[in-house]
Image (cartoon, rainbow over all chains, first blue to last red):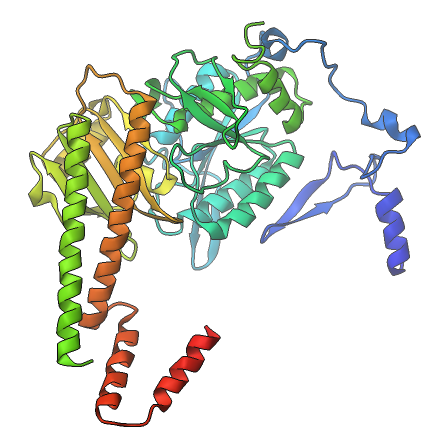
Length: 308
Length: 210
């Protein structure tokens, strides 16, 4: 292959396997894909004889009900990442967690400690994990600790933690946190979009204050605010974004450090409700893309078709 | 800078620090009254030390706490700071680690607390906390919004306080704007001595470049 003409031909006709393409390197928000040659794929256009290639893995029912969406599901087989202050190992409301990772940054660069033993430095990550576990009892939980090591550098650590989580290909990433730093907005946006196209659903807490913060404002994530009802399965679609869904977030009885529990209020606790429900849906319908998952959540929202 | 000018600026700066402190104090007093709480406090983030500092306190153990510091990732206030997310906890005592930590520092053990980050533009300046609302009053999202409004006011006051302190720091000759203050003083001296205005022209060019 030589010359730009050949390259163009390759791009148009012979690009393969976006489904198995995985970003191999993340560098300043640039995602490089290593394409594998085995699987043909429809690229950026669809010829008549290629329609069969985009056959959906899932048969979409005429009416999407909660029973269809997650009836009988336990979250089994779905990996949920909690990007937070850590998760307390052995908390009765959390149970087993598959992995604990800690992200730190110093003068030598980013360190990913893939066997972190510090647990939860605050309680908040354990709380989120407990909510997810209560809804999806058999999902896998992975803790990525990006908070608790001080204010300085917390934005960079959040960014690197999210980058690592997306590289791992988790199905759901719970982010009950945000940054207000403009300089991270662009990179976070690219990461959020790359997650969306790689079937990693980011679920992020909205701010209930009128501030610009990220990543919840991006349309490639699910943004979550709170409602006041006490039903963990009540969630509402919001037709006036940027907040897309409201979930239980007031007076939530959550797990906390020391094997204990607390009654807490905040969008931080509404978010893992949606993460847990997303894990249920994905355990029953593992082929759903983030777009389809959002559609299922919309169709089964309490104020849409949730009573069916 | 001439003595007269220095004195005038210094007086202005000192006066403003005092009035911003009063504004912060007023915010915690009103927050405490509105939520019928036992105490309320504002913490300022000291970015250089990576610590939170008690800046205004209303309540029983109040004034002795002003100036007390703790690491920026400690406890609930630290979490609210780094996560930018407001948090309301109804039974803090259930977390033995947390209550001990607070009690050691303040001598006051709250049962419940509301904590909200103080965000101004893209910076997080500190945390506002309201401690021990009446136990029988159920927390609602309306109160959360009210807390957010207070936080906004507190953040503006904190921003002004920080600006006043930076100006004061410049006059005292420490802080990163000190060099600008010294250049201004040198320029002032040159003008008094009747020297040519080449330095001003140089600065005018610099301003154009910036």
